[in-house]
Length: 504
Image (tube, rainbow, N blue to C red; front, side, top):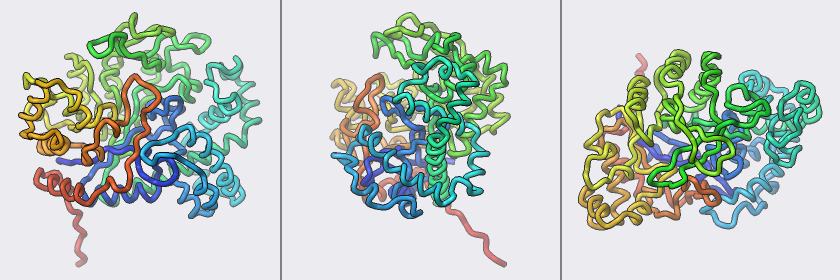
């Protein structure tokens, strides 16, 4: 079935409180998608961000980002007074998230909500108890966060040895000492998933499916690595022996040093891949479709000795391959996954993709080699089992990308798209994506509005100004919705109308 949609992270939604949330604006965006004839909303990871503010480097692979909790919804519940958050100076520029202010103010605002929740007996309700029972990861995550607070935000690798190595006596003492702090973090997760479940139901009832996103690796400073070190390549002191990255190439003389600990795939296999089955099962529960980031890393991964300053000196190692996905399919079902297969596509990667039968990705910005033989050009798609994107969170906008091209490539792009003015490029990109044979076609609000580099979300391998861009209410125009709705209809991507059964 041919489908289409818009990629927009929760954080990028507009509101008055510093960052996008699961409040009114999220529901309004679902309505906008429906108005525009779309059937998919793709988001970035819902994970709680850590240093660098990236949703791909989080304190937990399971925990949601508390910043996305709607304060207005808590006010409606009686857990907050409007003045407790409306009077806070959340940001100077509504276009950009101020993460420092969010960190400073958000948890202060949530403390009175937690006190009222506890006072009202929310922590002994059947719904709350069921949430605890269904999410076994909560306890370790809450202890991890409480201990981070107690250590001034330091990484667990800098804690005292008994806690760093999770010695039983030290862990039990910490659980007792920080019981109240743990309850606070569990409360935040309870409210997060309560609101997320309601929003997802509204989207699904409106004919909109959610594509969620999970990174392949965990952050070193995460509850996952701290609590389950046996599944990672660490030494006896819990220090990584190797970390993830990408070798030097034409784009980076020193390569990319991501710094994530690498899985001990032999140990995970001995456990019948239960760690990954649990992770994918959880993701499939909270999303309709799961995009797995850096899928090629399951075929082979680049391991760099820990402590290296660059990616020089690393080596390629074999990943688990299809053996992992055979188990995942058996335990969680065949479908519901998109493989982010961008990068070096070797014959073995192609075999893995073919075996897994997951749709891969095509990004139009990668297509325009003047030779015309790129596999990302629509006429070169060998299968409709793929998702085409005008751009992703790691790319510049179409307008910004075009501005940086050399003269020959610009000429080829214009000739291929049949345009004369560079201002026509964003919609021309959307047009060819929608007209392609790909089962799924995706674009962004930035593309619909024709925004330039100022609206870029992320520049890989840089830190400081990423993940900050936000849409404003005026970006969701009726004209863009009408254009996209008509294009979706004529390209046969319009979602089918649900017919109600007639009563006899």
